[in-house]
Length: 176
Image (cartoon, rainbow, N blue to C red; front, side):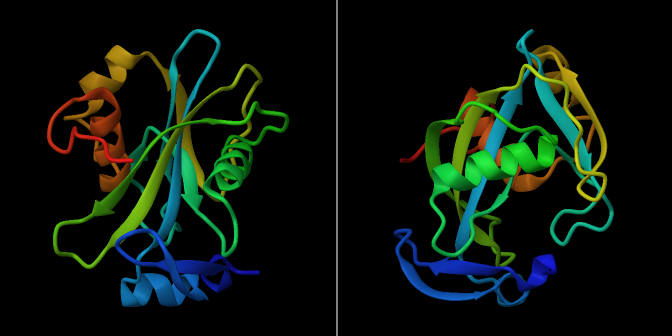
């Protein structure tokens, strides 16, 4: 199945399911849906950071400090977090990611809004990220991630989640 054909739950402003639609239609019409963000750290506490491939449907070629993606129709946030972390890191047997908070991401008038559940997980095994998803990656110390916040172009939803998680800058208040 092509990514744009994947069926997603469409949700309202309170995160209640109000319908279902293919991902391509959800994106094209700006329908609210669900996503997961998983901050993966290695045994030394460094954060997995990557640059998305140019072929990604949303935010191509931008940097991200989370792995994750959309929650499939009927899928729980928790199951999606584990599935997406293992898929994007190219590993199996990860511990279940720990839920930190959930917030409603809104791009400020561009028509993109989704419920975003933020998790963390420790990854002690060697990663093999999907080549179709990840163009570059490294585990970076937190200090370097902070330094790169103003140097690299980050996915806006991941940056909003990171700011809420760390209390750095705008959008620092967490809901949920």
